[in-house]
Image (cartoon, rainbow, N blue to C red; front, side, top):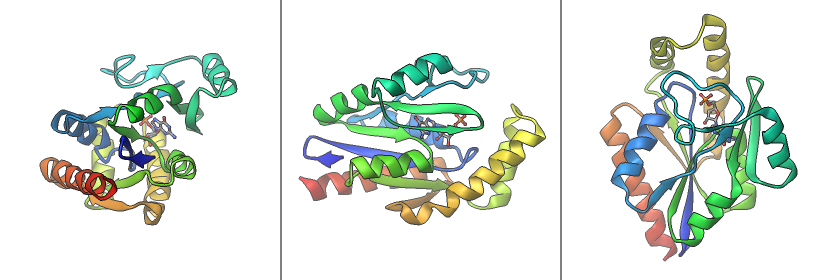
Length: 191
Ligand code: 5GP
């Protein structure tokens, strides 16, 4: 949703494209922006903190939250659930904030169905080769999982035509500056 009280900004992109870093810098540079922390049933990776990267919850708790309507949207991939807690997003929108969701393409589609004026941004790598290099560099996953993530990446990027903007993440500063400009322009347009 975007109205004069708040704007919902969805950021998607293939695993390894650097979305996490882009979003971290974006939040620091755009004072009215706030990040929605998703819930997931996957195990934390090294360095990930509960409540910051994700809320790491059990499958049982996740299913209960689905039943209670606690998610704005959720997806299941690589046998794990990922979902956007509804309450936080609605509260921050009503406070006039720019709420950033870092979610996959399926989730983005469900957000658009509920909030037609949400701003959908797709982040892509400079090339597929660069994505392969970044995924391998991360070094936290084995070859099988890397190739599954690449398959998924191709699917995600094939959906970019449904997004409002595609931003190529070549240079971090430039990427964040472009996203800030897009958000500010949208806010001006809806005032
Ligand atoms: P990862 O396991 O690498 O952190 O995330 C895998 C995928 O799940 C990424 O594409 C990420 O954007 C997506 N994701 C993270 N949180 C959510 C969420 O709340 N909802 C949906 N639909 N996707 C999410």
